[in-house]
Length: 531
Image (cartoon, rainbow, N blue to C red; front, side):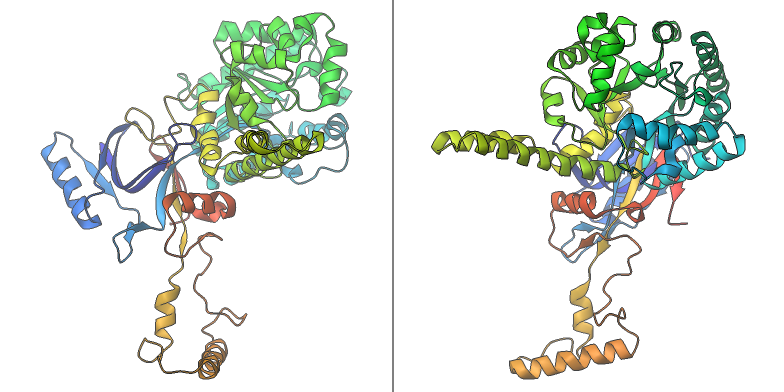
C-alpha cells in the first residue's frame, strides 16, 4: 500500500464565504491517514511538465511508496484545463434517512399533521432490521453518489434501527453523526414514542455504546444527542439529554422555529421557561451550547437569534424560506441540509441550488415590500435595491455553506470542507460535458471549411441536406440535431469560453449526480462512476 497518494488536476474550493479558490494545475499529496500534507501549484506548466515536476519532487524527497493519480486532466488548444476538477465533499448538516421512502410526498398538510400522516408510520416501521437496512442502504447510495462525504443523521427511536444506520455508515465509509431520535410526549402516537424519559435515555446510551464499539475514537462515526424537538420531549427527558451530552462530551442536534404553529406550541408547552423564547427553552435544559446544531431557524425571533449567536452559533438551513443572510449577519454559523423527506432530494447540490433560488425569492419579496410601502426615488431607491440585492446568495456562497460552512456547524471546519494542508482528503471529482461542436461542424464539410462564395439560399440547402443525411444515416440524436454530447456527465454543457466561476455556476444550477465521477473520504474512495 502506498504511503502517499498524489492527486493531479484542478482543485477548487470555497475557503471563505463568497470566495472561489482555483488552482488549475495542482498536485495534492495525501498520506495514508487521508490527511493533506502538501499542495503544489504547478499552474505555470503544461500537464506533462507538471507531472514531471511532481515526479522530480517526490523522487527527491524522503517519502516512499508514492502513487500518482491522474484524473483525465485535459487541456484545450489554448492550454486551459477543461472538464474535470476536484471539489470538497459536501456536508449535509441535517437529514432524516429514515424518511427516504417518503421523499417527494408532502400532501397539503401542516407540519404536525404531516408527521402523523406520513412520518411517524414510516419511521416506526424501521424497527424491522430488514426494512431499516434496505432503506438506509438506498439512502446512503444516493448520498454518496451525490458527493456527500459528511452527514448528520436523525435515525428513529428504535435502537436497532439507529445502530443499523451507524453500522452501514461505518462500513460504507461515510463520515457521519448518528442520532437516536428521542420523544416521549403524547404529541407522538402511542405506537411510536418512548415509554418514559428513563427508557429513552437508556436506549440513547445503548446507541452511544454501539457507535463507540465501531469507532472508539469517533474519527469517522460519532453519536449526536437528538431530541426530536422541544414539544416531542418531556421536561425530564430534555434535562436528561442535556446532562448526557455534557457527560459524554457529545454534540446536540434538534429543530427550531420551522413554522409559526410550532413556535406557538412551544410557548404554550413551556411557559416561563427560557425567557419565553424557543432557543431559551433549549438553553434552560442544557441543550444550547457551542456544540448544538439547530435546524431550520426560519422564524427565529430576534431574542432567539441573539441566544443562538451567543451560545450555539450553528444553524443548518434546509429547504424552506430561511433568511440566511440575516442569520449570517447575526453571527450565526450556517450550513445546508437536505432534510429528507421534508426536502425532496438527498442531493446537497440540489440543496445548494435551492438556497440560491430561495435567497432570490426573499430578495424579491423585500424589494416588493419596499415598493408597496412607498416608491423611493434617487439615493433612497438605490439603497433599497442594494439592501434587497444583498439578500441574494451567490453560487460561491451556496457552495461554501454546503461544504466548509456545514463542516464548521458540525465542529469540523478545520478538518474538512476545503483543501488545505492538515485537512483530510474528503473530495469529489466533478466532470462536465465539453461541447466540441466546432470540431464536429468542421467534420461535416469535405474540406473542413465552409464555402465562402455560397449564397444564403445555397447555404440553407446544403445545411438541410447535411442534416437529413446525418439523421437518416444514424449519425444524429434522432431529433434532427447533431449529437455533440452523450449525456454521460449530466446536463451541464461547456461551450468553450466559460470562466471557472461561470462553470461552477452551471454546475450548481444544472448539475446532478452524473457529474460526480468519484468520491473520497479520508483518502478512501467510497463511490465511483469511472469503474
